[in-house]
Image (cartoon, rainbow, N blue to C red; front, side, top):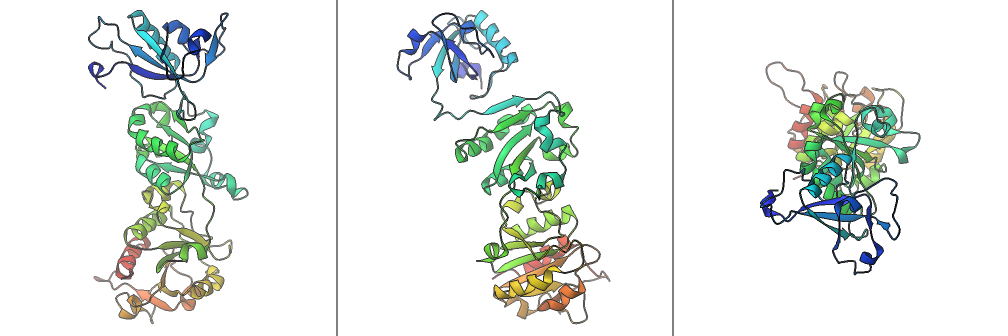
Length: 395
């Protein structure tokens, strides 16, 4: 913000020391003090008659002789004052600045916890740097499970989808661009001070794939798992992912599902987790827009099709016909009018290479193929899903 267009630089202080005779005024009053007395200190030694006020704003007014502010580091409001900023504040005082202290109402001014971290080895960053996807998921204690969202767009969609944030991690230059998202979080979670960790670029680039994150990451609490009945209650078109063991394919299928009108996604127990970091990134956050749930028993092995023993009867009980996308002698073309006329349809997709289990195909109501040209026998499962979602969308 240009210096000529503002009256001062607004900073939030960790602690402010002022004389009690000055606090006798109304809370809305501006309390004036000299800068050295208002600098935050970790363990203040209070002179007689002084007490700390927490928190408070400090407004630095340029002296009348200055047509513009000296080249100080201008910070967003509500940002905690760092030692570097204190040095700059001292410089401001020496330039003749007057300081106004404005006590804030902590119920109205939610504080933003900007935490400058010097190394990726800081234990507070374990979720981002050291915990594996299995550890983040925490199957033994699911209420403590987490997932990581990468990039501002994905973080924004996670927040919009009702995901609970635990912290953010970013390079300092990305903080201004993240402020609208942070404000949304503050409005949604009034009793939570969101930790925002700031790490130097040289440290951040040690994270695998950091260049793909576009500068920001967020740690979120894993949501409570939904049931098949809940996500399918009002659905007309659902996708079932049988044992798909590729994060990129899972994320791409969710993105197509969101774009092409699929109402819910069901994943078997052996299918890769839609909240794995890469799946979330590839989906561009659409995994938070499409309801999803696990279906079937955990067989402990992929390709067995054991989910179908209980899963397909469950879908039938909910009013769905099931269509297995597979190459088979008795398959029907995806443009068959009978398929499009089904009121509720579940499209079953198999893993890359092996495809669907034979028992799954045998238990489905339809076996569906996508007509091919030039001798090509099949498509990647993510590409096939997009074709099927579009062709068989509810009309």
